[in-house]
Length: 255
Image 1 (cartoon, rainbow, N blue to C red):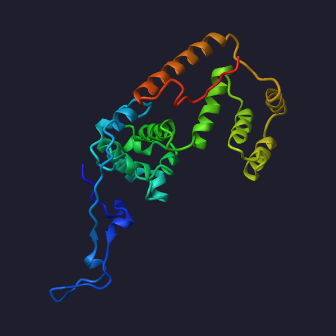
Image 2: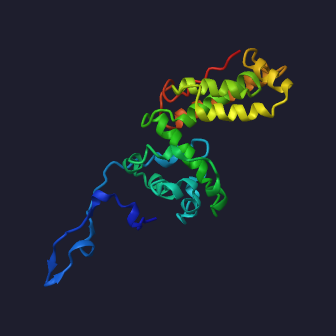
Image 3: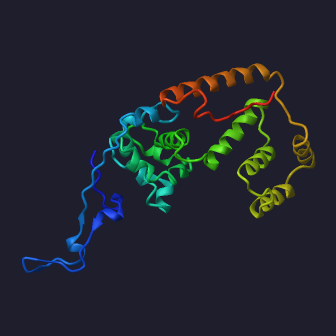
C-alpha cells in the first residue's frame, strides 16, 4: 500500500537546490527536488489491533486504499491535511510516530458519514476516525476533545434519566469545557425558538431545568446499560494493554 502523493510528503523531507548544474545541464529549482531518505525504527505492530478493538474500528482491515473516503470527506475539502485514507494506511503499517504528527486534527471528523457511504469495502471510515481519536485519548497522546466531552455528557444524562434535556446538556458541556454560557449564537438561537414556541412547552422546558425529568421505571434499564458500558470499557483497556484505572472515561451516573 505505497503512498505516492507529493502532498503527503513532509515539507522538511523535500530538498530543492536553487542553483544546481549537472553535466552542464541547469537543474536548479523544482527540477532538482528529491525526497530525503528516512529511517523509521519505532513501528508499533499492535496499533491496528488496538484500534480495531475500539468501537468503529472493527473493519479497518478491509481497507484497500482506494481513497474514496478522503475524496468524499467534508473536512478534507476545507483542510487537505485531514486525510482518512492516509491515516488508515499509517495505522495498518504500524507507523505510530507518523500518525502522532497529525494527532491534533484527527478528532476533527464531523461525522457526516459521506466517507462511509462512498467506501466500497464497508470499512466504516467515520468509525475508524472516531476509534483513532479515542485511541489517542486512551493512550494519553491527546487530552479529551470537546466532541468526546459532549458525547460523555449526553450519555451520562440519557443513562441516568432515560431522557434528554438539551439545556442541561449544553450548560454542563460549557462548564466542563470552560466556555461562557451566554454566547451570541446561542442567545440568538434561543430567541428565535422562543418566538414560535407554545407557552405550555416553554413552561415545561423551563421546569425541566429545575426538576430533572426521568423515565418511569428506568432504573433496571439504567443498571443494565451501565453494566454493559463498564464491561466494554474493561475489554477496551485489556485490548490496549492498559491497567485497571488507565483509560477510563470517568462516567459517573446519577441515581
